[in-house]
Length: 441
Ligand code: GDP
Ligand code: MG
Image (tube, rainbow, N blue to C red):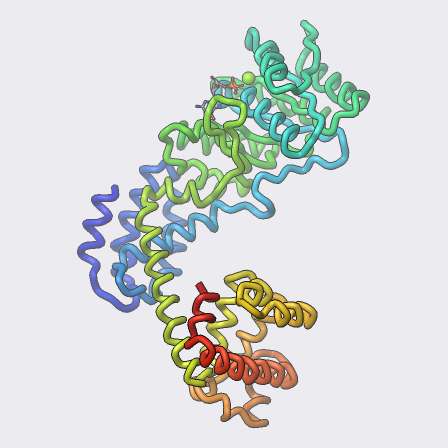
């Protein structure tokens, strides 16, 4: 794949903005990459279309090719799609005892994942966990969980022969309440493929347990089939998240993207081996890199963009040291601050500015204010930004109105601009801009 893509890149060497043709050419290959990574046809088509709209017309960073730029855009869009809401790996397990239902096909890794997750909850969150196997179909399935329980130091529900899954689930619930457990996990039986009997069994268990989380365990190597499985389980049982196992293998991870797109449910964890600690929270970045198989290009583009930013910062420093500090510079600063974790974060990094950071904090500065300030500057004309001295009453009114704010807010921004300009001048004299440059890195 990489070779084919670099072939495309070689042909795309124009600089400037991405043309529709550039984007189309690169995306054709990206589409193949997605399909090869087991992303389903419809998901790949929709995804590529969305990227196409977004990418056309974007400026191409110098020193990389349009094709590479497209890959970066695709990569970022993949991450956006893969990312679920909320904290990755978070589980709803308040209101003890919280039931977690584990579902999936046979051999997908349910029992292993049940134990891994129990261990994680115990070790990381200090939870008391009870595990119960509802697998009455496979011989020794219950013993398998019991053995894992001993290994990781988590209790399992005593095995009673002859019970059905619903009876076991009820007993687990009672035991969990009486025993003061925070969480109880129900490891269900799977089938080789989805059938009516399996679904009815899982439904019955779900109805008695009322799980806080229903996690679908899917073998990451099964690719396309996994998407069908996820869709079926979600329609019938209603899942709250997915665990993708065997991601230590050479699966490309495309199923993750399709599953997310088809079910809308977050992928919460990935299994990375047979050992009990081989479970990690899902990281969209990793899977995105895997799907495209082009981590190097993404890194290259990021590096190129960083270089541009550094170049711009350098230019700004030089001008500021000379006492030139216009609204474009301020805007760049504000944007940089947003990126670097807000005003306090940035000032905290500058030597000798701890006190100012404190003042800024007291003044209630946060990201929202930074964004409002940027909006004000955006509402200025090119001329006004380059020469803030132009900003008289009528212009101020227009700018504030354009940004949906009061003139007083603009006045504050202008005052800050003046103060910063003065400060920059002083700092420029002190260390030829070196100090500030250091802090910007
Ligand atoms: P179940 O039928 O869904 O309960 O599946 P099991 O938990 O019994 O797992 C079936 C096999 O897959 C076992 O040999 C596990 O050790 C293995 N397995 C489970 N998760 C992973 C994983 O993330 N990576 C690898 N390499 N093997 C796994
Ligand atoms: Mg099992």
